[in-house]
Image 1 (cartoon, rainbow, N blue to C red):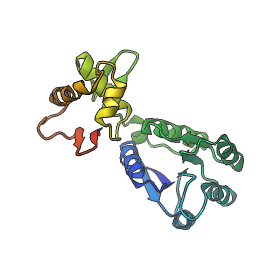
Image 2: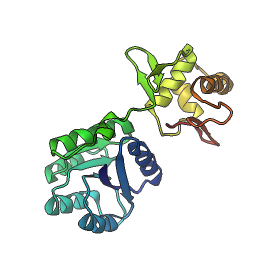
Image 3: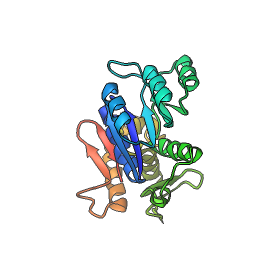
Length: 225
């Protein structure tokens, strides 16, 4: 199993990434406090570090500098900072990759495996062969569940495509109205629930008690695997 230390004070994002990466045989331990993280890294063996730059008590660039100085562990910077200077400094300090937020968890998973191959670290067959349950093929305009093609209407496909792209994250009704061109106004908002109910009948074993297409009360919807 791949073992990762993550320094991230956004607990909601951390939970999403931990849950997602666990499906690929990647174990992630998150630290909100950089000092606790540095102590743990000194005592335990980690294959890779995911580092946010905005942390309480200690700037992420300082953490990066200390990690590079003391350990030979690949580092992925995961940051919402848009200043190109931060990116340049992080890479000059020795970070191996810089992933600007927001990003799709799938991209992080691919970057982790790519960097670990470069470092000649072992990636188990389970991590390589584990497949996502829902897969969107934008070129073919198809969505599959466990490798099986699901036939959707145009409206169903637009919503499900959006959910696949933002898998693990909450998608609001406004996001759906804004991203799906078949829904042009708030008047269409009421039909979203009807279409989502149809989607659930196609992807859920028990549509009345969904396990994958979830309603997050007061916020919107979330697709999980």
